[in-house]
Image (cartoon, rainbow, N blue to C red; front, side, top):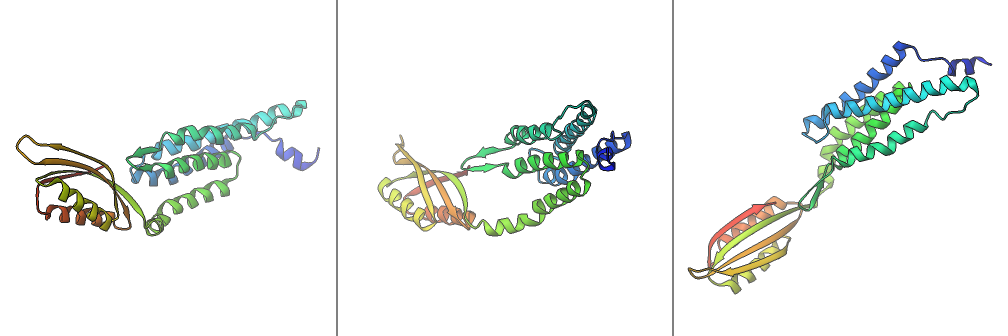
Length: 237
């Protein structure tokens, strides 16, 4: 047996195991600190636990390989790690939420999955890959956030509007004109006749563009100034 094989088959010392676990915890701190500061569903402790668990799985795979390899068995040390990569997706899916027409949590889900991969690297003893990857993830989550905001010039927002008016036909015409001017689409319309006279018109609008908040404000200003509108209430959602 040559020196290379002897080195591979060496059992891990307690200090080496502790070092790998500490490296995995450091990965969780680096990535989870940023997610926690951004008030995301998966924060510091979640990322630390994912990285630590992946590290433990990789260390266990390593030790199983060395325990049974001398007896002629050929266990695959990467098999358990592969299960971690696929299985952690269920945890990441739990951080994805839908709010109206938007979906949030995809970045956090990706960070959880990446932390698991980095934990496997730490468990395998690839410290430079593990810590370097954690630093790269931190840079992506912080420095590139501003760049992403500049690139995502098209945004979406929805608003519920309730209008009391005297002339339903003219108000509907005005609403359609203002919606076109402010890049909004009317997704739902209802109206009812009021006991005291007049009508109550309820609308759901979806705004799309680079300046969604400004478009919503202009739409409401124009509608408030329209003749025949006696009451107007709006609620974003």
